[in-house]
Length: 242
Image (cartoon, rainbow, N blue to C red; front, side, top):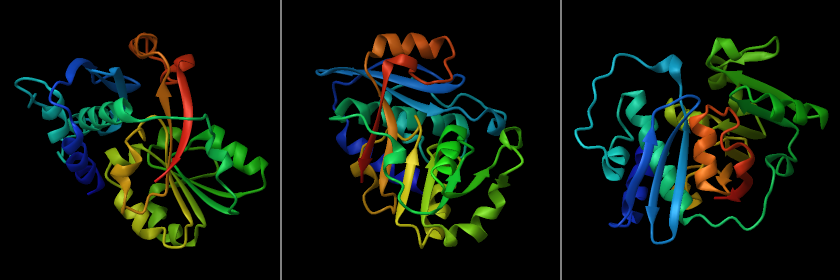
């Protein structure tokens, strides 16, 4: 389970003086804010309301390590808070030198997009790529969307795979990587894909395409007001090779 590996690697880099400043399991993004000597950092994870079941609070005293330890929990709320915490730790250490876009990476012709990310899909089709879009949530389907049940059969044919970071949360990322045997690039994307690239060494993921907060305080206000653009104007896109 890739999320378990991220947990193990994140726990090794946590500084003892990290302070848990704020957190919320919220829509559209769950977030965790931490603070250390370098200042504050914020991590996101897409909230998947369709997967939420009955839940009894397992956190007697919420803390950064306590959140991360739940990364391989069977409960989606615990996994989401854990990944947001892992991403917060990652963003604290991450250094982004230049702004880049995911479309700059794609040279391949046959591309799978896992998670119906319409702007990416439309841009790839305008470039003449043959795009296969897979989506688990029927509410996000359109006439050209394929059920995620077809990933197992079709992924071995793909030359590049763009995966929503939510695949970490619903635990499909391992199958996706294993089936994408022909793909030259497996790109984890979206606000949920904020973890440090070194956490993905040896997993098969080749690139991370995500966003970082320019101003943590302003980004936090945007999130609390329910921004579906993540950090809104307080963000910067980046693409990093693993």
